[in-house]
Length: 356
Image (cartoon, rainbow, N blue to C red):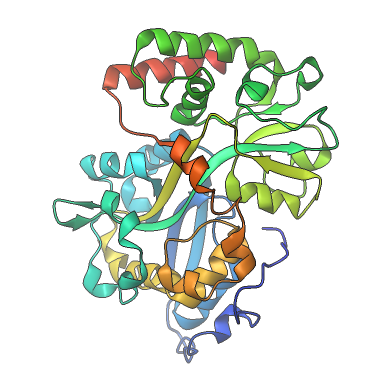
């Protein structure tokens, strides 16, 4: 982890551990439980983790992935019982449940469940079972170095049909549905189209763009990021990550392309290790305490679905159009939906050929 400037949230200047009553600490000889979380890198405020560890005999260990496919491979390789909590996006939540990779959550163990906006819970509940808790939501856009670009990008075609000075200076994303979906969006199609002709167009566009891309894995969000060093001039990023990158270089800007984008929501789901079910629920509930949720959201610069956290958030956070995309942007954006297996195979094949 690296140090980031904390966005001031209403009344949250104190260390996270002081925000809730302190636990008396572990008794002598008390064995600490390890709580394992499969997540994106730097997707939890370290102080929030420390505050939980200070109140419970628990050590939180995070295992990272950099794409949906990488997460899926980790679960298949290690087993769903290797992870107590997994960050799963909306499109994969039902699939994970179908494959018996998830254990439904018990609302009775979640005192802060009522803090969550029902708007974001619809996709988390299936046949009366709660599959996960909404964690953050947002959209995808373009981050760029304004000092290295001849003009600010306004369209997805500025990325997919880039100007010659951008050759070798684009950062893409290796998540299949998102990259192919954005290419489809640039061509005027739905990100969820299953038309073979549309997918063929998207593959042609991506293959033509390939010489301009320096890397398909998601761009590093740190002081060593190629957007910070200038090795990458234009990249696909999740909205909050653009704000993190600006902390390292204020010349980094973010734009929602005019065609619209992809809306996303991440959920915190429980794996199949039932031995740690109690502490898993305790951690999930801790994250949804409004003070903790507010602190975590301010640190990460993503939109929280926690209504209590929003009530105490700094006005600057609530008014930031990067964190909370304007209504006109959301109207033109789409949520990725499941497609037929044959379509998903075709998309996977496009990405495999692209990354050879």
